[in-house]
Length: 189
Image 1 (cartoon, one colour):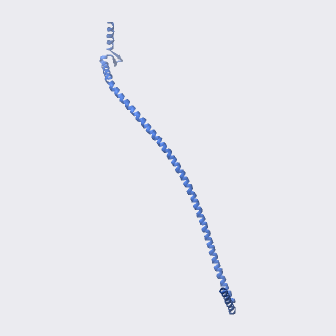
Image 2 (cartoon, helix red, strand yellow):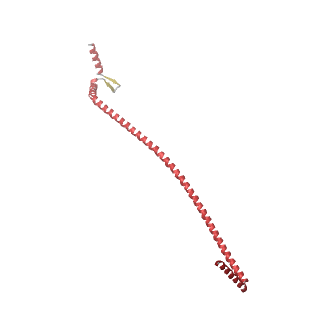
Image 3 (cartoon, helix red, strand yellow):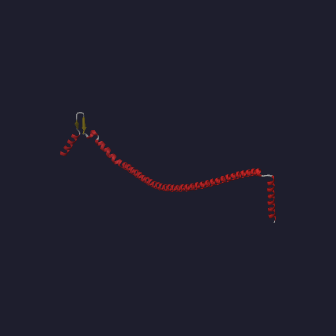
């Protein structure tokens, strides 16, 4: 009975409000505050919602694991693509070096060919120049010869005309006729 009275006192104290200040108070009456109703609703939710909540959590867990697997697969694919890209980059660098070396070799060959062609052109021009100089020298010498011959002939004719009399002229003609007969006699025998 003593216990019963104590419980009754506790409930009577709990059912009263405790004022905090003039305008605000905490209501400790369990029946008025619906704490029992809230407890019952929460218990029902936990009991019946446990399966739904565990299903939701399991689905969420599966989604997260699936996302992680997909991310790992994407990472592996990206790593493989990166490896392939690095390999292609190295191959491209090697090819670029090879092309650069071939280009330098081709440049050197063309340079040597141009130097050789320039030397040949220079030699041909030098030879052509020398031929032209020799030709012009020969032509000048021939012109001088012709002019000297013409002048000598003119002078000889002038000298002959001045010093030649009819008697001397007849002797020269006879002398030449005799020479011609001698030459004819030698050729006939």
